[in-house]
Image 1 (tube, helix red, strand yellow):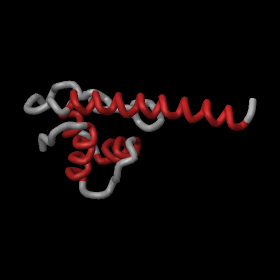
Image 2 (tube, helix red, strand yellow; image 1 turned 60 degrees about the vertical axis):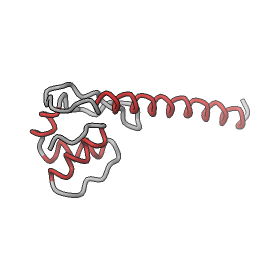
Image 3 (cartoon, one colour; image 1 turned 90 degrees about the vertical axis):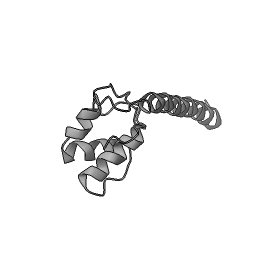
Length: 104
C-alpha cells in the first residue's frame, strides 16, 4: 500500500471516530440538560477523547455532590478540562461539561 492510501484510510477512520464522539457527547449533554430538581436522575455518560467512559463516572448528581476532590480531579482530567479552583468550582465545571444545569 502506498503512504497516500494509508493516510487516506487513517483520515477517514479518524473522521468517523471524531464524528461518533461529537454525536455521542451532544446526545448525552441534551439528556443531561433535562436534569433539574431530581438529584437522583441518572447522568448520561460522555465518552472521553479515547472513546471510553472514565472509571467511577458519577451515576447521578448526588454522586457529583458527594464526590471527593481526587474523584472530581480525575474526571476533569479524563475529559481534558482544567482542574484549578476549589472543589465546588471544579464540581460546577464538571456538571457544566456534562450538560447539567448547575444544581449547586
